[in-house]
Image 1 (tube, rainbow, N blue to C red):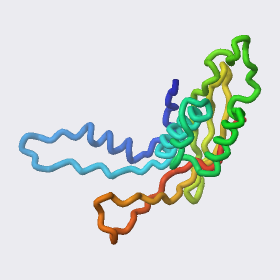
Image 2 (image 1 turned 180 degrees about the vertical axis):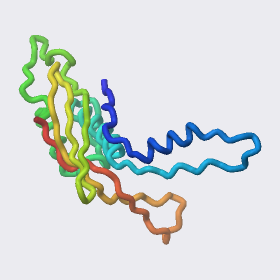
Image 3 (image 1 turned 120 degrees about the vertical axis):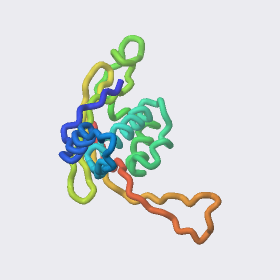
Image 4 (image 1 turned 90 degrees about the vertical axis):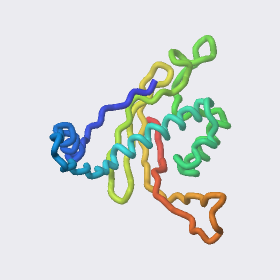
Length: 180
């Protein structure tokens, strides 16, 4: 079960715009409209949402509940290849030191990893440090990694003209991950 961790950084503008819009009530004859709240960009929350999704899919792939093909854009190709090869060899890097019980399965939880907490520390140049904890086999383990903003090519629509240029946008991608 994944429980979201509370946000530790609240942008001041977001809180102020919520207070303004909650207290603004227009009188019947008042033609003034309340000012639109400026969009607040909180990159840490965006990275955290990405990390929760990417790590959930990665843990499911490592446990054999999902295919590695579903990691295509969220995990760097080198990292996906490394984990895919380990899985083919029967090595579960996130579940080391778990001894199978009499039934051949690990204790409590059947050996499936479940994300517990994810924390993000923003760095310079579109790099974020990701760390947190997960449970597997009744034990709590830690992980740490790096996510980077990388350019991603958006394919043209099928009915688009050949001369229509391709679009590019920056997306977060998990580039390093280590299990402690």
